[in-house]
Image (cartoon, rainbow, N blue to C red; front, side):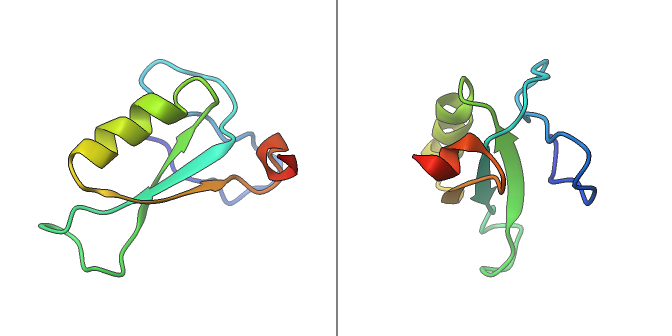
Length: 77
């Protein structure tokens, strides 16, 4: 799965398998069995995969937050 890039010039890509779309959402999560409560991992999502990736994490009780990726059009909503 993709994680946010450190270079502002690189497009962030959706974490869904096989998707190469630009990510506009960051899904922050952790597995409480493996990670400290403060630790967050990030999956990136395009508009088409925000729901399916979020549902996958939510069903397992891993989803902690969904935020707009900086610079994405979702910040204007």
